[in-house]
Image (cartoon, rainbow, N blue to C red; front, side):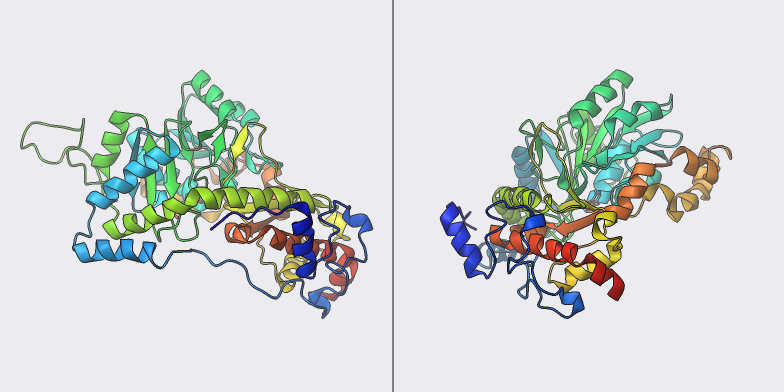
Amino acid sequence: MAKKKYSRREFVKQNSLAGLGAAFTLGISPGIIAGTRSSAGTPAILGGQKIRTKGWPEWPVWNSSTDEASVLESLRSGVWSRAGVVNEFEKKWAETIGSKRCLATVNGTNALIAALAQFDIGGGDEVIVPPYTFIATVQAVLMNGAMPVFVDTDPETFQIDPEKIEAKITPRTKAILPVHILGLPANMVRIMEIAKKHDLIVIEDACQAWMAEINHKKMGTFGDAGCFSFQNSKNLAIGEGGAIVSDNDDFMDRCYSYHNYGNPYGSVIGEVGAGTLMLGTKLRTTEYQAAIGLVQMERLGEETAKRSENAAYLKSQIRKIPGILPYELYGNVTMAAFHLFPFRYKKDAFKDLPRSGFLKALREEGIPASDGYRPLNKMPYLSHAFQTKNFKRMYSSRELDYNKYLENNHCPLNDRLCEEAVWFSQRMLLAEKSDMDDIAAAIEKIFRNAEAIKNKI
Ligand SMILES: *Cc1c(COP(=O)(O)O)cnc(C)c1O
């Protein structure tokens, strides 16, 4: 996919060809652009014309010649269990993100479970996690028998607030599990300072942060280990797949052994003929999955740059609309992955039109959007975990007092964020820059007609 660079004049032309006014391009604030064809008129939800009738890029993408050839070659070799192609995938991913080692796993969830296990994090240990993440982050902690401790979110960045971590550290805290949620880097410089000071392990959940960087260093390489996901919706899509990266050879040898039933690997060696050495499971990925991953990896850099450019442009446009607060990046972020494009929707600026109505109106304009995560620090899976036989044997009844737990893990800013967040998916950011104007125009149209929409729905 060639990156298109428009001169200003060409860009204005492109816009008018697409039937869009040039007001956004000229940087006029939405408050005074009434009358542009783009956002004028009746909202689609009230029977007007849709801003956008054409679709958005599909996901995943593949190149029918190179990608299909690569998968076919793997298929026809008859070697489907892990061998040379998986080795090559691991080597290439480690090189791509600047880590010494990489181990491919069946998925990101089990990459996290394995990494926690191989740092010996288990019953009685506390692990600091954000509440604004995909469920797998927290399940990985519980699956090892450890206790998740939630630290509130910084609503501006959508990331764990590093300044609230220290207050949650106890003698039982063993690790911090920061997540670069939505593909936007968490503040790893601060988090590593805190971890060093308190002698804590750091495992990065980089399952949405392929190629994201702070000071040109890739996410997943700041902590003791980093975990990735290559699930179908992810920016590096294989179907199902994951990886652990680290510079720590002993740890990576243990992860390898664990992912292969605890059989000997590297420094995990016993007497000759001793057989299986460690507690382990089976997390091996297949050759044809790695074959898909290798060709996807070829495009990742270019796609990431495109998402990043489109995100910056979209942000610059929609931030002018009252009540729309797009994500902020920390100052040292040199690249974000934009698995999702997030902003906060302040309904008071939209005549109290509820977020659900805003989303519905947006979808009617041809702009798919979602409301994102629910607060993970207060869902039934936690109390279920506390009622299991294993947890009852590892923790006292006081520690498993669910109401007390809820109180200690209250994250008020995150609760609010979960009510205000709106996401666009990464695939929309693979459209052209002029397509971003459709999104901005749709939001602006809803802004102008918020009262009427609220009365209709
Ligand atoms: C996708 C994801 C995971 C889990 O990865 P899978 O490959 O789906 O198992 C973990 N954490 C985060 C933040 C994710 O987005």
